[in-house]
Amino acid sequence: MNLHKTLFLGLTFLSINTFAQVYSDKIVGKKNEALKDSLKTEEYPYSLPIWGKKVTKLGYDLPYSAGVSVNYFWQKSDLTINNLNVGFNNGNQFNLDQVVRFTDAYSNVSTVNIRPDIWLLPFLNVYGIFAQGKSSTAINAGIWVPDGQNNWTEVFNFGTKANFDVTSAGIGITPTIGIGGGWLALDMNMAWTDVSALDKPAFTFIFGPRFGKSFKFVKPERNIAVWVGAFRVQLKSETQGNLLLSDLFSLDGLQTKVDNGIAKVDEKQTSVNNWWDGLTPVQKANPVNAAKYAAANKALDTAGGFLANIDGALSTSGNSTVQYSLEKAPTDKWNFIIGSQFQYNKHIMFRAEYGFLGSREQFLAGIQYRFGL
Image (cartoon, rainbow, N blue to C red; front, side, top):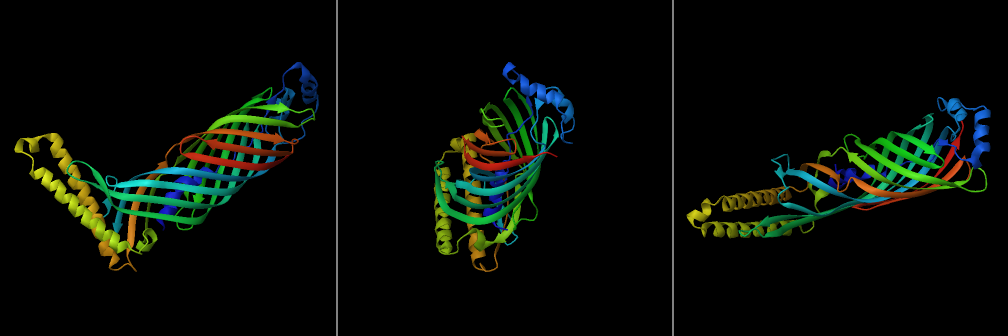
């Protein structure tokens, strides 16, 4: 299992963004009296939604009860990684949180998803999600250690980038309400995303509230809608796995980097020891100095042990393995959404949406076809 594939999982799920702007609209206003009267007098011809006949008698204009949409989605998003533990050849694992610093952990994702849906109730849409996508993920990190004055220096760095395929499936619901062309939608879905190297699919929950307004054209059934909203992602963050040393590090020049790192750790250890030995007994008894000394030694022991284990693994690099576990989460759970949809008629709609703010950026474009059921 490849580390950049598992880190990617924290980002892939964000691609399941499938909200489609149709809703049951309460017809109001004197200029719409003719439409309102026709809804009350005409017999609703479809089986869905449940209570469809009753709500049309109350003056609600319903969308066609079934539909399918095809959407293209692109996203770039950052990850925050915590509780990173790494070991070699099934030996002891080192918790690297104190010494590792990630300079980059992000993914570019593009997917195509198909979304079949039905209106189960006049104000509740239920849908499925089927998505296929590609991603490129970049991760860069360094190992940092302190000296006696608590100045931190990078002693070792590594980076990785990969391209791979993913498949997702899920289900969702969208409660909505519309009055006079204004509407509120609360989109929610859960999805399972599979990467071939993973033992099991990973789970994500997405919530997307949106508020918008539809503006009619002169031609019947034709309108344009605009909306604003938000996008929140919650994902299962625990990941662990096992991989070859060559999957995590480029072996070209690695021995030299490890040797240099071990030498820098030894140099910083000498600096910490000299600082401590230069303190008076009273200064050593100061809890602040004692805590600083203990923390520096812990960081140096972790970095030194980590590098020494890489050094040992390199002697059998063809067979050496790396075991790891980590917790990951989106750097920002929320971002802002703006969007628009052009309804050519009640059968065909075209949609575009853009998300931004924080550490996530996304774009969606899609087409939807609706029919009675």
